[in-house]
Image 1: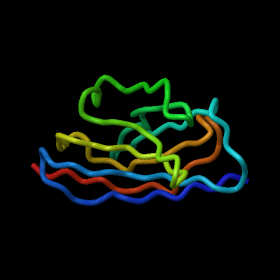
Image 2: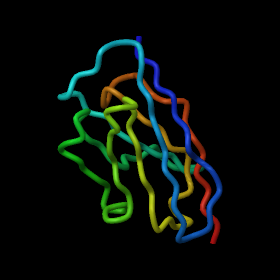
Image 3: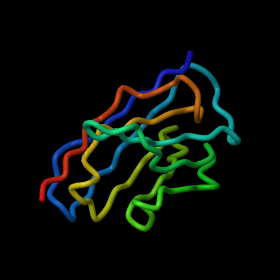
Length: 116
């Protein structure tokens, strides 16, 4: 069974940066599997943020975060990251990692709050 542990959320002022991490465990993960980041703001549907293959390739981003967020993987730590720069109040949400992509395996969620 896949377990995903997230960390890195918090409160930041607009224009600031945060880095979220997602560490999977429970089985061997393969380079062709995809990791995704999603977010859900209060009263809104969960939405796609970014994804990558587990080898760090084939990154994709939602238009709303393109150029500001970067998804990556640290091979040494077996951890996926979402680097978020130039944060805006509209980025405020609970962020979730999903791995493998579109599976039932989700992280516990981490709150990101961006103040104006």
